[in-house]
Image (cartoon, rainbow, N blue to C red; front, side, top):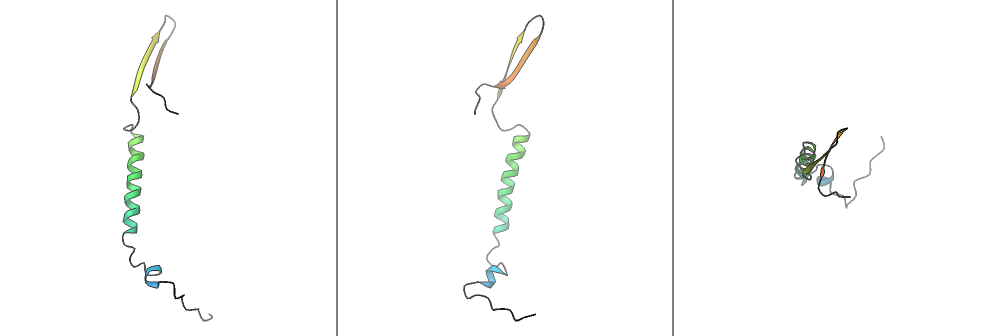
Length: 74
């Protein structure tokens, strides 16, 4: 194996290789992913969003029930 070059003077080996000073990073990522997961779960169970109103129309031949929000957003 040929001789390896020494690391650059600008490179901080303790931070780049040994990950010193990066103890908060994983916890910040975990917290952000947890918040995103919570929003997804709340949306999936129907806790987020608009309330809906049910309107009905009937005739001798058929009945129509419409369940929709009162204001539609684009």
